[in-house]
Amino acid sequence: MVGHIYIYGEIANWQDKESSEYGIVSLSSVVNAVNSQKDAEEFIVHIHSVGGDVYEGLAIYDFLNSLDKKVTTVNEGLTASIATVVYLAGDERQATPNSQLFIHNAWTMTIGDADELAKQSEGLRKYNELISDIYVSKTNLTKEESLSMMKVETEFNSDQQIEKGFATIKVEKLKAVAKINTNKMNIKDSLKKISEDLGITKPEIKNVMLTLEDGTQIESSSEVAEPKEGDKLTLEDGSNVTDDEHTLQSGYIVTTVDGVITEVAVVEEEIAPVEEEIVAEPTALEVEVEALKAQIAEFKNAINVQNESMESLKNLVPIIEKMNKSVSPEINTNKKEEEINNTIRIKK
Image 1 (cartoon, helix red, strand yellow):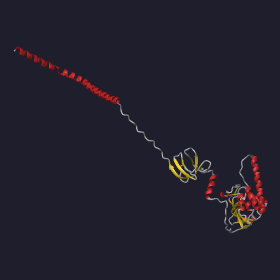
Image 2: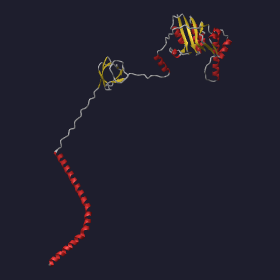
Image 3: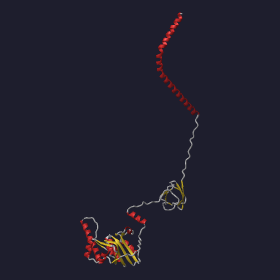
Image 4: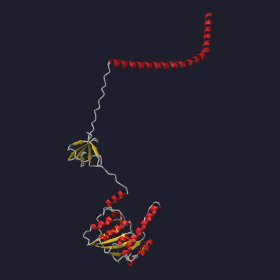
């Protein structure tokens, strides 16, 4: 049986079992792939990687070399940087027609003072020496050639890989194989993982708490406050509520059997009776008083009418006086004529 290991993606020190879902290859993922294929008599390592962490790449290289089985590495696209070292762990190293292999000096990013930068610079030179030694032990390059090619950043096509000894054979066609990823997650779990990494969390929905008429708190299996048939009710200690009718402070009556609601009813509000107002019969005195009040009211109305008449008369007085003045001379003339007539009669 032939086992298969896939180094597709960046090499990094991320030992999480789900790292492969994010295009990360680590020592753990390679070890897990080997352990999941215990019956394999040899392994084919498929490589398409831009490289990555130097320490992680060296660890994978040493692990593959430690296997007491034949290891064949295949450059299936781009094998670059520290991935070239992993590639050299193969007893047989295949290169596909369009594959590329890329080597360069180790590099890093850092901050600090002059001493810190000098320290990092010295460390990078040691990495270059270490990687160069591996190239020399596995390829046709000398130490000087490898260091020179790394310094100028050199790329090799499939034929040049054979010429320089990186690859041992050029393959025209790869044999199709089935890849089984035992760590593969379903879409739902993948989205959950991405959300967690981005800090996007869905608020936890807790079961609703209900309160009995006597104040006892009970937990419902439902996520809504309105009880319904089928909801399970438990006490704070986790035990089921008793089989009985229970009145909730929210105005519901629930019947439970084995802690499960079998019936829901609404508490009917009691309407208090309206008391009729009792009107007492008036006494004789009260009747007489009311009659007097009515007479007084009539008198007041009559007085008001008289007052209005007097006011009208007062308004006529000036008019009458004016009229008297205008008719007085005529009255006096008539009187004199009458006296003369009477005198004449006497003389006769």
